[in-house]
Image (cartoon, rainbow, N blue to C red; front, top):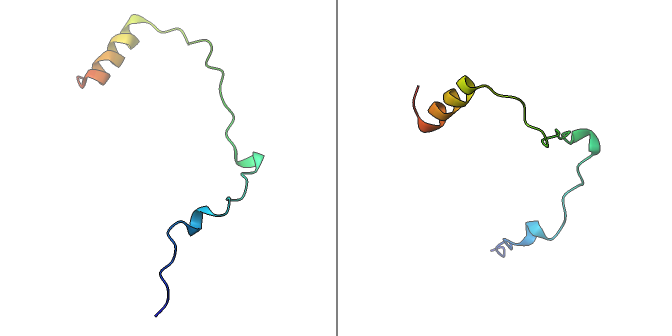
Length: 51
């Protein structure tokens, strides 16, 4: 009979680092785009589960 595997064994080594080519570029979120009142109403209705 073989000994049971240690469930913590997979945490003993770090994964390979992620190359920069596989990373995602972030967006500037300091300024919000202009919205009009109809978009605000549509968003409110969507979030409330309405039309």
